[in-house]
Length: 183
Image (cartoon, rainbow, N blue to C red; front, top):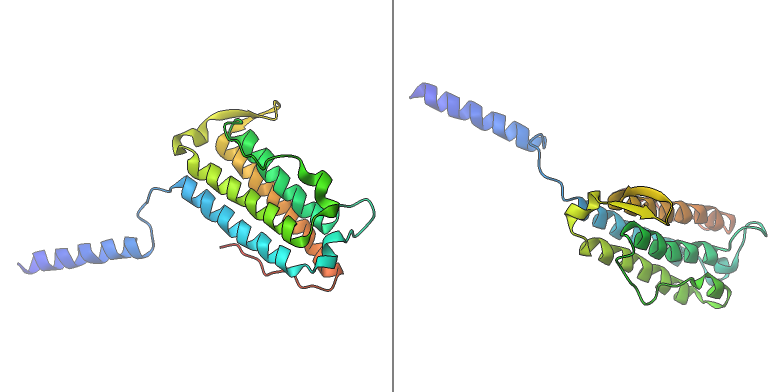
């Protein structure tokens, strides 16, 4: 009887050890991981949009660079374009068009709305994908062969790149950018 209690106690300790250190492998819901990352990116980008005063939106660090508004709007337009290409054009969005031509006349509120809608589009697209299709091959922009998941990761990389570029715009205007949001 004493041996059974010792064995049961030892087994309990081993199980608790593995559970407490998350060593037991759990299946990863890849879509949920992607959605959480995009939700976090949306929140982070909104903080950048909010941090910039209206006058920052028209600011260009050099004449050949995009303005803050143009950077953010380019981010939004390409959220649509790259996501649409990544899923093989299977998604449609009535607001998807090349809006960059309209940027100079857009207000901070209009740019913010357009950017937030682009994130909503990406998140809704990912939610609508069957997870088994993430490994499907797609030819993006009739040029590059990749998987749907990798194409969506390229869209994520692109928005991160352009949001990161706007850090310099804020700093040059004396504004401290929002703190990093890795998790």
